[in-house]
Image 1: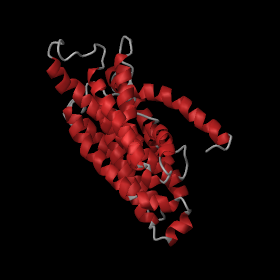
Image 2: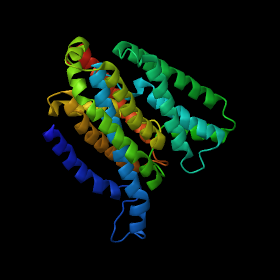
Image 3: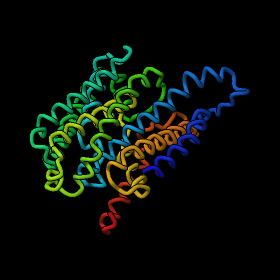
Image 4: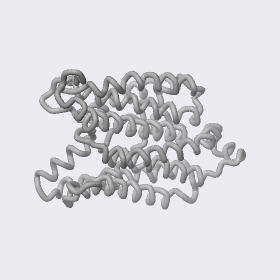
Length: 317
């Protein structure tokens, strides 16, 4: 883990200052007018938020793959991201998004509702199969309600806002979103790190994990809270950004001993790096309008997912 942490920390230290300069117009602090203002109010909060969101999604993906013992698992499977998206869509639908903090608060409320529903269905037994099915049900329900909200949008402007927000982006984000996401994501990663040793025991099987003193219900609650905080906060400030939790653990795993507890922190750093680089890339692409970050990650993640499926078919995973 130490080597992986060092590698991604060094790469982040290189990528971060470059991300502050990247944009449709490259920033030259010595010659660009109002360079200090642009850095402080536009580039800096956006880059920091990219790292926060990426760290949360990367850590959540590593924890989920460890819990389900499935390398194709993704945090969206829990239903927490769709629940957060439903909350944000409700804010846009009712016209509350213009008020400061209301859209993120609605998104966090949606994530909390999805967490509560998930825990109510699967919380007593702690079984992995039931937990997975419950997550799929919550995700399906939240997705259906989101589609209903889009179809019943009160006007074309609200529909456009909802669809654009669901695509995920860090455009026009400020220090306000950083203040919202940073403590929640940090708390979520801390909870997932606490669950790491139990996830290590779970790799030996549920029966063996129980014999080693792992409480399945406690582990389930730790994961629900940890993933709820990281994914819910990320969706609240940036919309739906997929595939980070799927891609990152696979990039990190060869650099560790493959135990889930040794994967969470490096995955957080790698997720921060991936989203920082991806956001910098969409800013410099020569397009009429900036490519949405969620779309860019989907274009990258879909072929990666197909590659993983082919490896699994050949028995390499």
